[in-house]
Length: 402
Image (cartoon, rainbow, N blue to C red; front, side):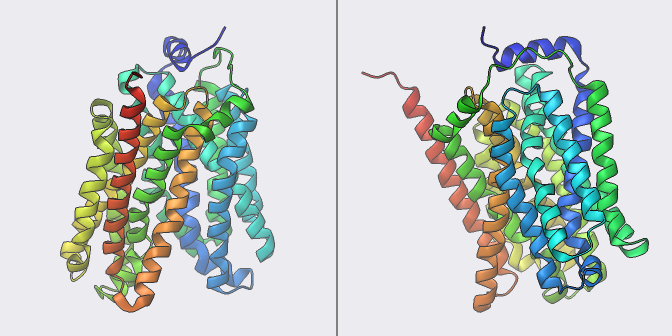
């Protein structure tokens, strides 16, 4: 007998308390968000300790992103038959151990390897966590459920990252990675206690999960995220440099600007989760359109913190684009739910590579750090085009053949 997502949803909802399950999953998101963003802030502290230049140390960030891109599809396929609770626990144990190893790294190559391993569970965790979160609530509330899980990551940009940075400055950079290991183990304990224990048997297989790679709707939705979200990262990557070199507000102002952007991500996650449940197709169009318009205002707004801080807060809200796209993947992925959900985070890490790279080319061409806003706007427009093609393809496929 085949078990569907709705069957699992009904079973999980009857046996669990959605709020505590979502909190347990969000703790994992908080750990991952702290690690992903704090590693950038810890570069000035671990680079001299490992005897390397900061430019070389930045490669560990790329190693983590590469781990996300590779790990998401591979682990999703390998874990196709695993109960979601078991798979989530295994992923977070690996995440904890990799961060313990990072905390004790003695040289650059060791750190590079450990950060790559740290990235492997990232996408698969969020993908499986999104499916579990959706399985314990009614269908009409699933975007809100996904948003609650993602809130852990966004809150990390406001609380976890500054705390890890303080640890790096005071007691040593190794504690910045060590605290992530503690958070990951806390997540393991919470999932062990509160996540649904008696899931219906999963009928998935590695072959059925791989069917996502031949699903046009899955691929077009992933393309939308990889391109459209690149605009957010084009701006985020150069906010600090813009504050220092263009706004000339000094380094002391950087944490406040980044906190404003992180705060926007938190608010956006909660708001978009509610909107996406009611207008699932409109939500991505609205997010990318508003983000594009805001990014066009980025250049003039960099003249003063008075205009820059509220603008980056609003741009930060566009970081919630992953939520409606994640929900859409649940609709179109068929038997490949786990792989499609995990690939969503691979797509956003590709965006994390595309956005800064295109912005860097514009800045290097002499257009200044303000150009990151215009690059972001262009990528948002490109994302809108991709999603328009996605929706049109879905409607064409839904029409009965004559």
